Length: 67
Image (cartoon, rainbow, N blue to C red):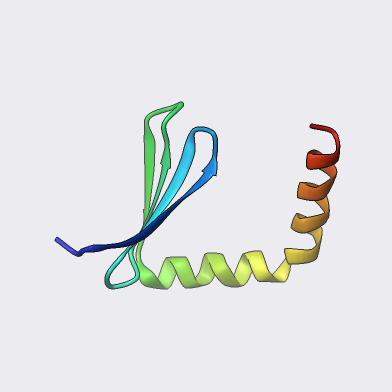
């Protein structure tokens, strides 16, 4: 099994893990659901997020301001 490189908390009940070979697991502990992204899918998600980065950042800042 590929070795875990790093992990991070995304939200209170959500986390991500990066494994050797570029495999990413997204975990939602609230719903007990996991999503596995291979390296190619992770790259496509990254490109998609970069495309909308400014909009995503503004929304996150707006949510933080109302928290």
